[in-house]
Image (cartoon, helix red, strand yellow):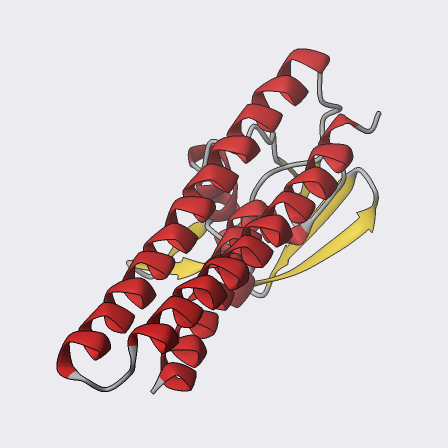
Length: 185
């Protein structure tokens, strides 16, 4: 019974950490990164379609992303979608492909991004705490039903806390790494 609760908790903690990592990929660091375009949808014959499904995306150099659509007629739609995405990018098209130069981040913008990343980390930690709460409630329910003893419950609560603390420390590590990338000039 206790092992099931711990397995469930670990799965939820892992999901929370992965969600946090996925959110972080959308934050610009001054370097060209295709992940920032994940949320961009292009109007493809009336259907909002992910950009990577209508064009070939490449990082040409550390400050440039190139977008080569499979149909030339999509260039204006791609341009419009990137401008509407509010990523702070200014697409340039030459009739064959769209170039996205990555502007250098100002110190003020870097500080704003660090604040945003810290907020995302706090949201990630809240998700981890919710998973901890659920695991603790399961343990208390098992004790009430007679599935475990009081000693098992106490040990289980301790294990749940230790496991959650490790996951929170992992989020802090990821946050520190991302902050370093953002503040790197």
